[in-house]
Amino acid sequence: MSEFRLKYLSKLAQSDPNLPTEEVAKTQTVSGSPQNFIPSDLYPGIIIAYTSKNLPAINGLANVINLALYYSSNGQISLMSMKSSNFNIGTTNVPSQSLKNLMNFCKILYNQLFTDSGAEYKNKLTPEQIQEKITNLKNNQFLQNLPSTNPMGQLGTKLGGNLKTEIINYLSNIK
Image (cartoon, rainbow, N blue to C red; front, side, top):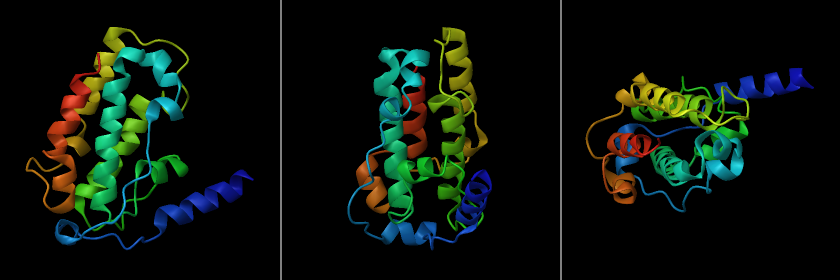
């Protein structure tokens, strides 16, 4: 059974979902909205590790990233679609560098924030451990490589600001 799963995930990671380029994503209108992704519901260990006071920031961060993934990929990628493959989605065929960076950042977010390197959190993190994780996320190369300008098109309308800044602000509220 695990061999089947490995073959399936490998095939999924190599598939070309015909994602738009950055220029096309700026002008394209995407209908609908991404499926809700509430990390604290999907990964209850977050509540143990980060306590309930951090849930609004964690869930808000996920919402912003979910919107960015969805509208940057013409509705083809969301946090739920990434979750369905355990965040093992290949980015080699993704034409947009921003989307590629965002998808790779989501993989890191899954391992550092939503889970404890893929396992459910079992213990409360100390403030120092939380700060170390947040600092690592803020300094992550994929986040740093996101554009520092406001997004254009539908994504810009939905976010109302700069994606990179929004992500950093949400991360800064997790203590």
